[in-house]
Image (tube, rainbow, N blue to C red):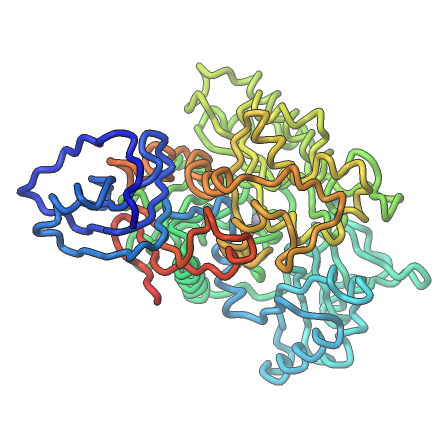
Length: 572
Ligand SMILES: [Zn+2]
């Protein structure tokens, strides 16, 4: 391996008498430290980085090292950090009726038939993961597609994005839902245009009508799902995740599992805030909303960096609109492919503003789901109003680092407001490459200019943190990195008008998944790059994703995941 250019010799406060715990040698290391961007070796003591530099310098501290790993030229990155995901949802997706990759109605029916055979009579069947955008025809399924297979089982099948469900006739009947049932605020019961009967498709807040009947999982089932989910994340190379909104019970369980060492992943937790159906939307698929989990956070206050920085709880997740796929995203002008609607706003200013002001006083980070340009503008307006009403002197944290989750479609006039207001854009690259098949239809060409506008946001000075939104998406770091730099579907397709200029550079993508993701949780000084004094969180990859051709990024695997200097996952 040819010597790398080291910009400066790092002064190492290492006492030779105290051996390091872990020494990694012969790596192709990207540090994201501008003083020393590349290195060959890194050493760890007490869970933290104590040396970053050349192999030659590392040899001097080799004696007595508890473990030495020869990386044999493999790429080592700062530990990858998923800035938006749902750990319970990921775990339940692994354990429950998983409909990811369903190719059409016939496939959905075949999977359901197999599931019915495994399920006792009268028992609920809850599944997740179908998405009709790739089907032919690309239309929502209906209860009639399910009914003949499931006369005795109520069924609720959640769309991959978590913003729509398909229920069978029995489930609708148990919910007392008939043609006279009105649409709830922020939700829609899809109806047959000829008969007026519900089709079985329930959008956003209408999902609760059926979902509240599904028996919630027991505590031990939730614990099992969280552990399974965390193990999956670690195996994929994630060293930390930001859990975007769930119940207080789930948060307490997670905190305990981390304390007991059963979960090694770093967790940044956001609790579900007040508002209709919030908890039901994306997290544990069968766990219906039960009021505001966030109330507890306001009373007891944030938990910061517990268990050697492995557990933090200081966020509240809110929702302002729905998803683009289900046409629940709130747009400034009507949908191009359904001019009678411009989506749904889930909450009002009067409901939200006092809560936001209180969060500023208590030092709580707000993360609001906003997808449409109207949803995004409303949240920027509300954040701005709250900041004005509660000046820095009255805040628990002067720089609140509030976030907009997804920030998918932004009116170009609103793009600079993220940087001006200090709002973090928490975005999911994979959404852009999944949505490219239907977003042009929903939005029309003009609005695509502000859609998934990563580069415009970055150039305006905004911080973009990247995540996967698993289980809405697959949740694989290499898919997110590829999507960010290629902005093409997994098989290399992109529409002509899919704004390739909004791609991220590889360095920007890496930052968004590490250092900027850490900034989004107030942790850029303790993790997110490889520097002396920071937590020793690393991801070792099978290939150098900073250089290889784009399609090869998708073939790259995590060989090793290291959290706080501990090798928590290893494969070959
Ligand atoms: Zn989400």
